[in-house]
Length: 121
View 1 (cartoon, helix red, strand yellow):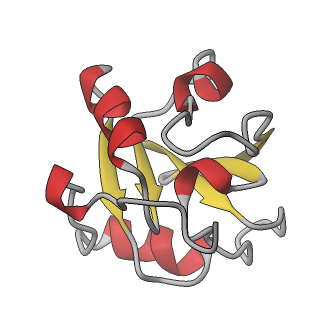
View 2 (cartoon, helix red, strand yellow):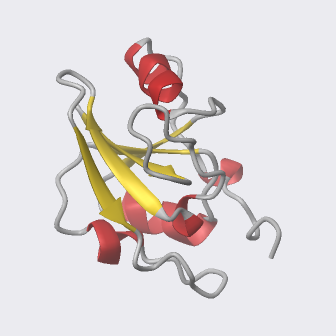
């Protein structure tokens, strides 16, 4: 399975997960079976509240799900409408998050779990 994860910096499997999906400087796409990684810079990182366009940045990439520390309702709804599963992590690094996903420990994000605002903005 291929997962897309928002990270604060590109440090391979040591990359720290970004607390808010749309504000991540990078997305890493990881194949959970082969552990291969692909880096995608987030060209939509600086956006107005509620204007996150994840599919504009990730639209040409192939992945099965997204794992987030947090995500706004608008981005969550757009991803779900596109048939993309969104999972929640509380783990600090890509390595720990992928391991937790492989063990079935990450819940799918529901609308009531979405952030109502950008943290720190």
